[in-house]
Length: 201
Image 1 (cartoon, rainbow, N blue to C red):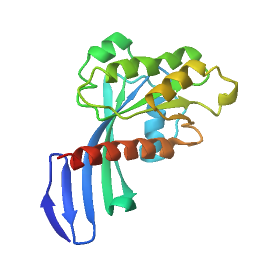
Image 2 (tube, one colour; image 1 turned 90 degrees about the vertical axis):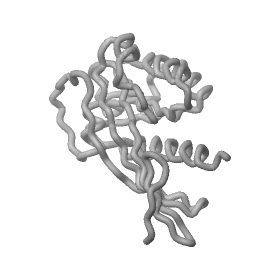
Image 3 (cartoon, rainbow, N blue to C red; image 1 turned 180 degrees about the vertical axis):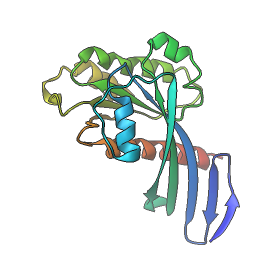
């Protein structure tokens, strides 16, 4: 298959019938300490779970690639996510830091057993709206193996998510519930955004 360089961050493989793109995108996991960000990354990237809590210092970066098909556009995208697991430090410090610079997708994580962690979604939305470009975002209610989402007071979360069109998913790093789905859905949102930008004249 013929191969040529495309735009920054993308390699284009073309044929008369279809194109295949390779994209590398930066995704940040954001949330309070102890909500399970590191466990979600380990489940997604390595398919393992460890219930020992180790606080992240600064940021840890891992990478995973997977394919996304866009049959309606005759495209296949090999998407490589650079997943930044950002320490759940003070929010003001986190948003002033350099870790979020250049993010192209955000996964906001809350602990379903700790309602006070739900407010992180509003903080990330406020940060994203100050950026020059739209940042695809998804909100995860982690540890759904320990609490039933239907019993939680999610009114404020749902109002904000509906207004900003942000998907909300209950997840469990322990059982793996919705972890793959969460990253795949965010990946599709990132690719959809990239495709729209690519089609602009």
